[in-house]
Image 1 (cartoon, rainbow, N blue to C red):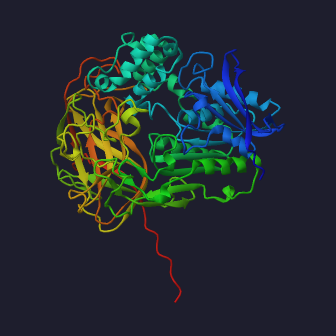
Image 2 (image 1 turned 30 degrees about the vertical axis):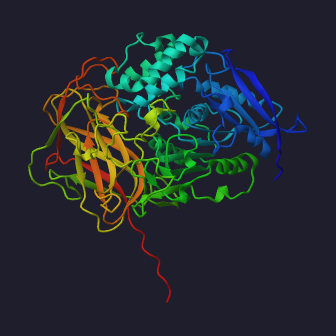
Image 3 (image 1 turned 60 degrees about the vertical axis):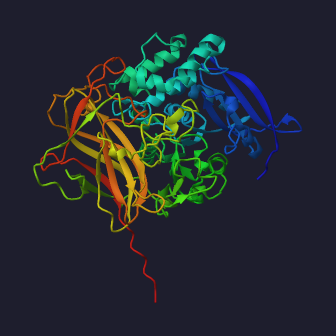
Length: 626
């Protein structure tokens, strides 16, 4: 294959959209002797709100322009209202038509051979998928990493609850927005909000419209309040920029690789997108799920939080994307077409010992050797999955046996002023690239520590009075769970509205490094009670009345080794992942008061709270000829 070692860049080409707004676009072309070569070339495109000139700053990620060395034209575009582009920025919605118009414009250029492939992570994945719902011309393939399917369910709102990550994200975006860059005083004021994010979320949330520096960046404030207050599912949330699910059928039928991480906030979206598209489209669809949290470049790491997965966990998206583009845009027979459609990293199987040394000592307690390996599959969910109910018992037992006695529920007080903390990497500022939101919730030992900004003590979280633990006896064999876990709770409350959470944990037995054991969180979610039956027509609760809640934990793929326990923690908050419920029934995003709710979980014969876990039967060892 011919490789080129020069490139020629056309900077800030202003590409017109259908309404006349022009978007700043950098075009990188293969070159020789300082001059662009004629081509035409297949094109790699990224559309981003994070400044097109930064694409590839991280050493683990290929710079977009480097694709020119492999015979591609590479195009990077600032989203509407961001950086050098014209117009006003409103997240997600404009990317549908703008992406369509951008790719149509590229297809008309003499340096394009008519085939365009898109790549990108997070928001840069959203720009791909939302555009694809318009069946754009010239789109030939996509590599979608950690992208959305439904923002009403994930990373903006989750089962009726506002994701506080989105508030921090708006501050981060606004401080680099056009208004702030034009007004140093406004920029300093928004930066000060970010510097005091912890105090705002703890003591002053929800903020009020027009009463903070965000009022000076009106489009950002408007979008933030839309996301905070539009809690009911409405036509707003059906827009293809916010929700792919109603638009799967109109999604262009092209090859797509869907890449996600077990600890990424979009893991449920990734597997659902693959499942929907693989059954609807004729073009090949691939799913890759590894042991990674959210963020560009995380795939190259061998650990997440405090869990080390072995050197094989590292995944080169640089190499994989290039192979993907060579196959889908150039038609090269490089073996990609023969790969299994699903590739999963199966976590677990390690020694459970603490790993020491410079690579591991950045975390309190070091890094636990959790282990794991890659495995190919043919479908998602796995056809051999055995969905198995495990019931909650008043003793704290988690068991396949249903409860028989009529026992009293387990009751606790949920105080929204003292929510259950999520643990994260200590010693870093809240304003570091997403603060704790990109670090919280990944695989940490569920024990509080003083370096956790929102922690209180050095005790296991399970000792809190507002966390109810249900766990199996030590397992007598290895048990693999691969898939999503359904949570069915029978609950009551003294409040007219409250939340319930569930966390799936691999509970290690004690050893010399972790005498009390190690509680490795794998998956978690939340459900707001007023949306128990409908997200379009919420209903408040009657205090003391028993209600059924059902929600789904994001997928995982983990082997619980013999001697470990499968553990489910139930509570009513996980902070700062989600906004604590004020328990008053007040309008979302508009309340001022918070009260304590007395919440109950029922686990009797009539109200048998339980989880349905995706057990993967052990494969029979192959017979060996004698």
